[in-house]
Image (tube, rainbow, N blue to C red; front, side, top):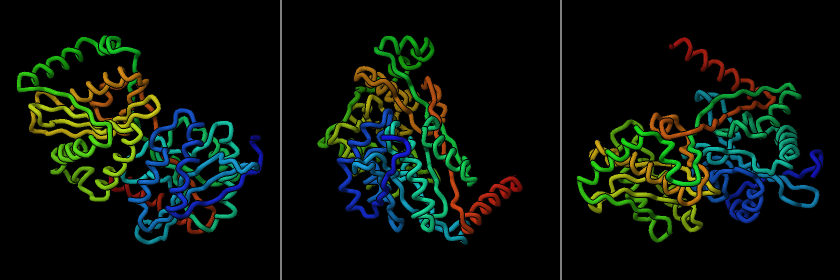
Length: 374
């Protein structure tokens, strides 16, 4: 398809329509190299069923002159008020709230990306110009061509956009075999792992277990929830599973993804009792470390959470994975084990009307208040 070929934009506004997109969505996603699980139909559809609430589904589909689906903008319209005063209609990526999705993006093959972005831009600033105030593209890979295309379009039109957030995903580039990986760790890390393993083995029967099939994941998921909440229940946010909606979303998505072999729930047991767990994803040659849990009172000197992570990294190598992605957050333990980092960027664009200008002024006022308070 030529970059300037006319594309037709259609909008999906109901969950029933969204549900019917599963096959076409996956077929298009296969043409996007390096995409993450967080762009799959399953992740975003089930996020919508649990988190959309009173907001409005706005998935934009781009079709070429042959009625071929060449692009998807997985948006929803978030309705709220800025500072509790100004009504705000914010277009956002599905999955961009509450569940720490990473590597969100407009879905299109690189051959079609320019035409898709330009067609979406024309649609949003012409046909749909009265429907939204702010467009927030959250947690995008910093290297995504979408950012370059969108910024070029905004610069040409003299419109306003800004980077409003950045984050880091530590990653581990895996060698082809476990021996090479262990050698690369260095003597101190190898000694630490061995010392902690010995400590745990002396305390009882140490066992690693993994649940991947739908029949196994229910019990393993409940163990993960219990261990995660033991760690976080006394903290202010109460942990990921303190919220019923979050617990229900993850329970459902784990079941759905396990049917396709895309979930891995790993446990470390002591005398048959789980003391650490990891909830992760296996997708397109990458193991994504999504959420850990551990009993803070169970053998803290042995660091069972660290031992389970080390075990999972080696398992990923044996399974032929190329990467372990530790996902968002530059916690010290992630940085210590990582060999590289991927950057995520959140970019915000403003529509050209009075309410969008007022919202932009509010953003500036909030930044000024932070400066004064500090």
